[in-house]
Image (cartoon, rainbow, N blue to C red; front, side, top):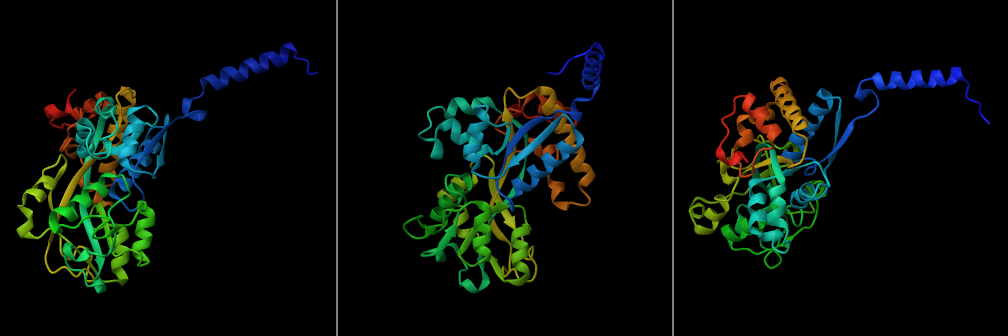
Length: 341
């Protein structure tokens, strides 16, 4: 049996006092879970940068990234308090409020969206609809009978591209073409290996994954023809919350991009959301730290230049978290009414 002497008790007490005096970061961090899309997507890039900046600047917190699953499921987890942050979008918020699309059978969706708050928005980029140059495919209506990656099943990208092919070319998934059911990572690899004919990805241009392919392969991007842009079906797509008609420039992927002119496609805004009960001071510090880090890294990472405090409230249709509201106000952002509780 161990005998505790007065000296050992005093030593134990002194050790405890010394530990108590240490900074919190020396022995404990608050672990936070952030869900995003897979590598090769703009949200993954921006949110990985957010986590890295916060983890480096704020020693009390450690954000751990989860890059699996779909944003439409992630927002439910955050709303229910099972996760701390995730990627979302104005379109997802509208669908939840209206109990539409993938939320049609989720009775709680309109109440759950009320539990979410925006941390910041950022441009996700434009929808790339990529094919190999030797595929013979030059327009959307030529994908009939092909294997197409629309996005992960059940996700917003899948639903958007499904509607796009129907609106532009009258083609229906499962009837006119095969929608390949894969995640972001697996789909990029399958397209590189030639196992997918058409690869769709909403991302900033130039995308690292597609740039790598274009180094050794000719590629072409499909778009919305001018005579289809003003149709009712396409305008419904373009007019959704967070969406717009956008341009994918000719030549942005170098000489192996076969498009002779710019491609008209869909542009989209997304964002980072948290639960309404997330600590205000924590969100404030993270928002300030993130934009300070972005400003510092802007010269060496040109893609970050579009991630600005002003863009944090673009297309916003979900109130800012109080901590983010305070931070963005201090950064001089003009806060629209839609961003206030």
